[in-house]
Length: 314
Ligand SMILES: NC(=O)C1=CN([C@@H]2O[C@H](COP(=O)(O)OP(=O)(O)OC[C@H]3O[C@@H](n4cnc5c(N)ncnc54)[C@H](O)[C@@H]3O)[C@@H](O)[C@H]2O)C=CC1
Ligand SMILES: Nc1nc(=O)c2c([nH]1)NC[C@@H]1CN(c3ccc(C(=O)N[C@@H](CCC(=O)O)C(=O)O)cc3)CN21
Image 1 (cartoon, rainbow, N blue to C red):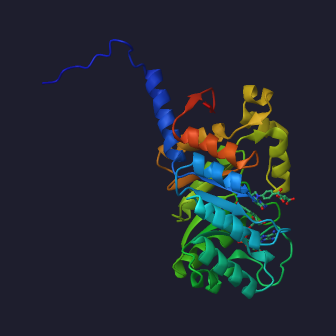
Image 2: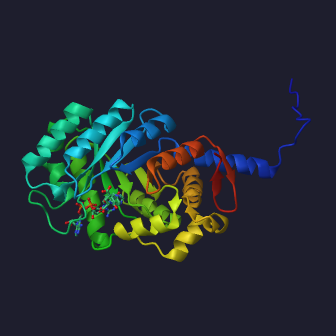
Image 3: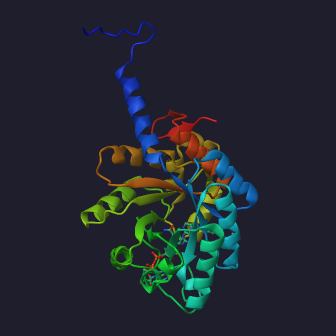
């Protein structure tokens, strides 16, 4: 027998169910989010471990001016905290194949690293051994030291010096090379502020037949000045107006910018099923602790929706 269930206290309105559907899209899109830190200290790694689910991927960015062995210490700390270390390997930084080999060997033996992000690096020249990421992917050196999965870079807003066509061919070739070498590959994109550009870029990749998961890069919560500084440092398009719009008017008054508007737009697009496998990757220009807490609370649905985005509850 069918007994109608009547909620005597509150009738669920269409607006309520729209809100819960949107929050569901956001929590779904954010599941398995990753974070990225530059030179994290022990307390920073601890903050990730305390706030993110175990096994969350923590990407460790490579600083050209720092010895790459620092990456080993950071990866060891990360592994000990129960978080998965994903070091950046900026291929232009290595003077020889041996130098890269010994770093990979230490990462593997001391920190159990199985995943890395292979990128060219910002220097306009090469330290000697490699000029483009594909050379390392094709070299066989990764498999030799136990690497099973690689991330490669994506540039939805274009690259400051490399033409779109060149980047697209490089991306397809790297995916092909990874497949040939038995490496699993995903794509991690440069951060940006234009959700529609990200959506168009992912759909174009799918049209080209790329099925690899895409981690869509975004800047975690930080103040506008810091955000603009990093955008400039990384060659990312970001007008003051565009970033302020992304921050939302009220949030802007407090000088804080969070990627909630972008997350919400991506989550809605993802819910239509048209993006293929996608997830979120947060750069932590405002601190890794704050970024991880923000992402983690949002992933649990601890938020209030506003006109275009949401505010995460403390
Ligand atoms: N998406 C992300 O999360 C990150 C992106 N990057 C930056 O992305 C850029 C591209 O790296 P990949 O996609 O791995 O390129 P890649 O190594 O696959 O190279 C693709 C093409 O671009 C050229 N190229 C690469 N880097 C260049 C540079 N700095 N200056 C001039 N030409 C360059 C290469 O010679 C090649 O023809 C680098 O500048 C890298 O530092 C860095 C860190 C993170
Ligand atoms: N072009 C580009 N290069 C990168 O290294 C990079 C990206 N894009 N996009 C995403 C992240 C952001 N990363 C960054 C961004 C800024 C610094 C930075 O300002 N570094 C300081 C030194 C910091 C320190 O020593 O602790 C610098 O002066 O280079 C580092 C990594 C790494 N990734």
